[in-house]
Amino acid sequence: MNRRRFLGIGAAVVGTGAIGAFAAPSASRLLAEGRPGRLLSSAVPLPAAFQVPLPLPPVLRPVRSDGTTDYYEITQRTARLEILPGLRTEAWTYGGSFPGPTLAVRAGRQSAVRHRNELPVPSVVHLHGGHTPADSDGYPVDLLLPVGGGGARAAQGTGGTAGMPGMPGMPGTAHPADPSAVLVGRTADGERTYTYPGRQRAATLWYHDHRMGFTGPGVWRGLAGFHLVHDDEEDALPLPRGERDVPLMLADRAFAEDGSFSYPALDATLAVPGVTDDYMTGVLGDVILVNGAPWPRLTVDRARYRLRLLNASNARLYRLELDPQPSGGDALVQIGGDGGLLETPLAHDAVEIAPAERFDVVVDFSRYAPGTTVRLMNRFGSDRTAEVMLFEVSSRTVTDDSAVPERLCTLERLDPAAAVTTRTFGFRRSRDNVWTINNQPYEPGRSLARPALGSTEIWRFFTDVHHPVHLHLNSFQVLSRNRGEPGRYDAGWKDTVDLRPAETMEVLVRFTDYPGTYMMHCHNLEHEDMAMMADFVVE
Ligand code: C2O
Ligand code: CU
Ligand code: CU
Image (tube, rainbow, N blue to C red; front, side, top):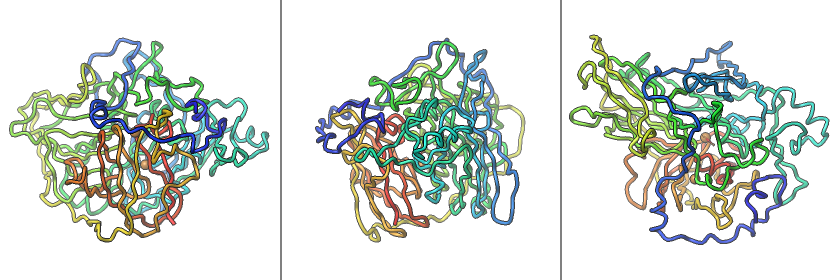
């Protein structure tokens, strides 16, 4: 089977038998593969580090509120941004900025976010970490068509989206086993409202594009933003807040000579998903952006700061460490993870963060002498990608009444004895060079699991190479890594875990509140687009 044909979903009929057996590579070869991805170098000179101030994404205000719901509006559109000094980059944006505007919502209140698509391509919005009913979860074929695209669809008369004239990047979604059955998903014309009930605890979430086959290029071009959930439990703690609560979106990118984002898409018009064979393990850029700015700097008071670290990179893993370390080390005091607060703080010298993971850390800059410059380093990088940003510790005298309490909250522990079943999922590359889960390349509508609503299950993941595994709908708790204790970055509620080469993990997950079809996938976006996804149906 030809990968190109397979990935041209709708153009190819793929029998699952064609995927064939996976030839297990030796453990030593797997470990030798190291971290995924291949570096794509920019064609422009890179700017010096630490020149630009750290931007903060604008916080979106609701257009209105009522007794239960806050209403937001976002227009997805192209924007010419100055990302590298003196160059213009055409980005795909939420509301004209990259990152998109931050939604700051209250737990217990519903948010209704109306998206209008003025992009040249269809889009899908997913709230990552959101506890979301299926029809608002951003299922990859639930396309939001561009404004004005609806007429073409109607004219075609199929109700489907395959082969829509004049609209590059419009995937057809014919069922591989039955090409006459076109899976169109819940397609919307121009505008769609995503409803988030807000039945979840305070946490650092993010929203991003999730279009079938094109999540990698969509996010790379700018479709990502923060969605912060606040609640009373967290607000009652004396954690740093206001200007000292800083979201940091890390993303690597590469730039072409004209300043545009470069991306090794198999098809530049984005009619066919996937990247060229060289980049199949993932696309790494040579420019490190934080909140959309290259290697920025931030002046900080000699006080505690909460840094909400999000790795929004397509494929890059980071090992983040401050340089210099304050004396005594333990500079990064983790207070939360993907799914909100940990029970007790966990101090690290360094934090390893895979794509889509979040680490909420408190750094006490009063541990540094006034005037110290502190670099945030990426110990997994080399040359320019070894640096992330700079903190300049100010010498002004400030007060700081924040603290990191020894006990942050009480976490419910899921009980392995309550698990009704254990399911096993292998994340591997097939002999035919597609990324698969249990040897199956993604096919919308084919589910690999049907957990019962309200039940707890153990899901066991194993891999060939690095795969950051993500589940929609519910956060989970790590039960074991390689049959031993969870790792040092596995604490608390997680929705994404990095499986390292040849590893096995078990997580405990309880499927709550919303029945329907959800996704499990690798969050290396090139792997995701090249079929490493699966549906599960909660019923
Ligand atoms: Cu952030 Cu389905 O993913
Ligand atoms: Cu998600
Ligand atoms: Cu992967």
